Amino acid sequence: MEDILNEERPVLGVALLRLNRPLVLNALNLALRRALAEAFSRLDADTGVQVIILAGNERAFCAGADLHEYVDATPPEIIERQMDRLWGAISGCRKPVIAAVRGHALGGGCELAMHADIIVAGSSASFGQPEVKIGIMPGGGATQRLTRAVGKFAAMKILLAGEAFSAQTAAAMGLVSELVEDGEVEAMALSLACQMAALPALSLRFIKEAVIESMNSPLDVGLRLERKSFQILFSTDDKSEGIRARLDKRKPVFRGQ
Image 1 (cartoon, rainbow, N blue to C red):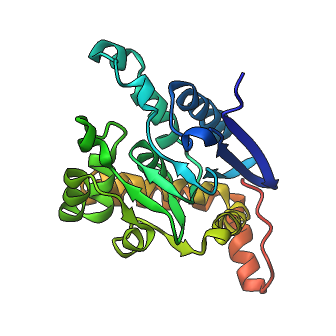
Image 2: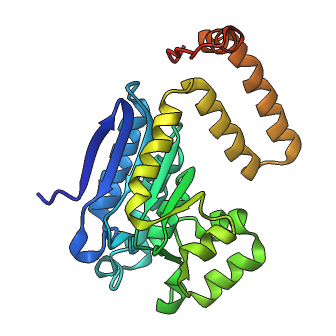
């Protein structure tokens, strides 16, 4: 069986998932989509993992859907693939996810990157949603996530023209969290992951939950969730340790409790 998704544990608390279909620029076929969904569900439940890094290779993070599986597909066949559940396993992950993007992140690959919480991009990376050029449209959330990330008018140009754009353009419009040299992408992603893995797990989870809620709900609903999560954190051992360590001018030791 083809080894299409590799899992690494580079440091304690961090899992790295690497797409491994280099001959097709890590294109997403159904097997890879299922492997990603299974891995994210499993890592979300793994108490030994605090942060997940998603990476490709030097040429491509992910060049989009594998069109061989689309060319003759009918609507009932597409429905039967239950793509919403496969994408949902990634978007529903409660832990911080960092996309380390080198090379192409196009179509479903750009959508995959947008499922992350932080995007670290190399200077020669390229992004885009070219689906319109082959008679379809994004189906992995780009019409919604991209619009929330960069605004209506920038998103409309990207989606309706279907042209790729540079990492520099992505960074300028707020789609990229960190822009670094190509050779530094994974090192930067790992550095960020290590920083977060050393922080209180519940704080990380509640912050991610509140930010995502802000994208999907009116302001008052998001503020209520933030207040409730803030209050709940006062019952944790990590809150007491963090504040006492700050007052004592020492490094805190968090235990995820």
